[in-house]
Image (tube, rainbow, N blue to C red; front, side):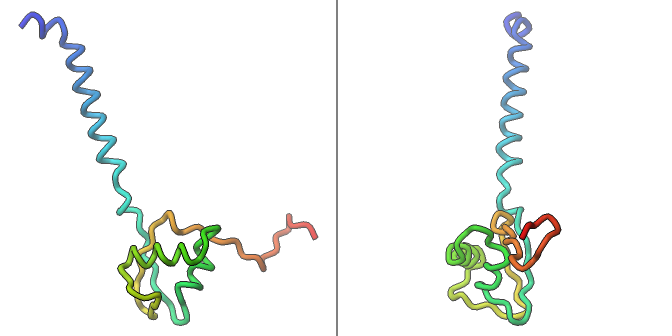
Length: 105
């Protein structure tokens, strides 16, 4: 009993470290929670969505990832359908037709 009283701060320190470790593991393991629901409009295709959202990721890679995430067997989507897109796959491509005041000619 005397040993426990002498080392109570050490035991408390290790218990705190253990609790913080569990907290960090469980709080940062939520990749599934970061999903965006995208409703498909008339005329949308996976290729046009890739044009808009893939950023520098090649279109075919982006489409493959979206198909896996949504369990699509074929690269066909229909209007009214909702796709789950991971936030990490929403890299907006800049609009090449948009001219800003800071753009020099």
